Image 1 (cartoon, rainbow, N blue to C red):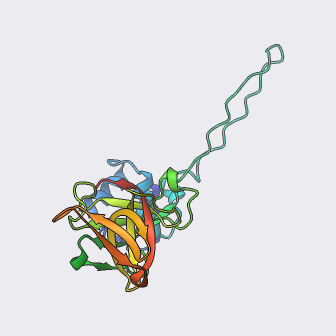
Image 2: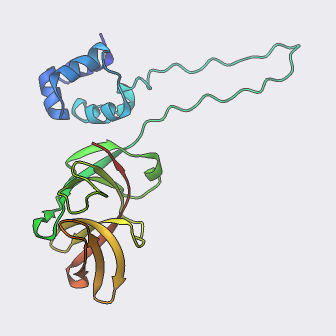
Length: 216
């Protein structure tokens, strides 16, 4: 019996219920339990929360045996041995509510995460990073619907950077940062027409920098 099946049964969950909680399908759960699909970091992060365990347990890292010491023979010169690589499991990163493109189609930021994904290495030392799905086509071809943006909220934006702009009303925009003007922040969007516009300081809450993205 696989560790994942044991953990699922210990949590009192059917394959169907676990699939529902993890946002996947019962056949995928069955493939993971029977070894037809490999357990990856992304799967471990997604399944760990409904199972009530750490992702490392699903990846089998907690049970990994310690490497046996290597003792050189007395007649041999000292051995130069590489230290065994430490097992590393990516930390989870929250996915916040999707940002809809277009000034007249704003999405409003939700308080809590709607999902969790593995934090990329380039954000491992960042404070409070998050991800956000693109909704709408105002930034095509740069950003496309269903892409997952990786955001560093504490990195100052440079000209030309993608940004997530949060207004005081909690409305959210994904745009290109142009410059900071005396009256506010100048942004650019590409669709339905390439144009620049300004979000006034009195309406502005924060500007967060997009540092990467993940294809759907």
